[in-house]
Length: 232
Image (cartoon, rainbow, N blue to C red; front, side, top):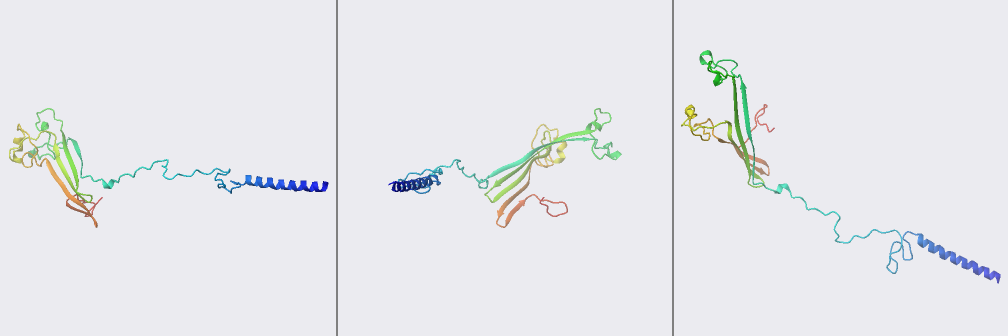
């Protein structure tokens, strides 16, 4: 009886060892289990193991919202634009006559003497000139479309000395008499000034053609440095 009992105990011990070995292997394998590695078992439940990344739902908004693309600047057409500047320039000239007397009998002077210095008996001669002049330059641009435009350069009161412009009396030869008039008017060439109050110096058009930029009209032209045309 003892021999058969010993064999039964040995067989039972081997069976238990095999059972515990299989259970331990199933628990130690990554994501293992009776239902298969990293997958649901027969009941549809998740097996124990390494955590998985949560699946992304379709249609979910991203963390950072997507901004609309900026508008292209080339599509914005400015029909009219105006540029230019206003200049105030002062002059101070000291002894430009180089000490000569403005007298034709004595040979004259390279520059006129100040009015206070022409009479030797007059006091207050400082032998200097002071003056100021203005200029308003306007440069309008009219865009007909994205490829064609018209450009202009207009000078208003160009190099006009500060002060009133007296009303003329029918000719430049009458300027000294008109200077003492009691009325004023804008500068008029040949009447009370050597030039008009407004002068259009440039006017041209530009067309962006398929073969290049086409310009025609009274436009800027470079000259100098020994070449016929100098674009800078």
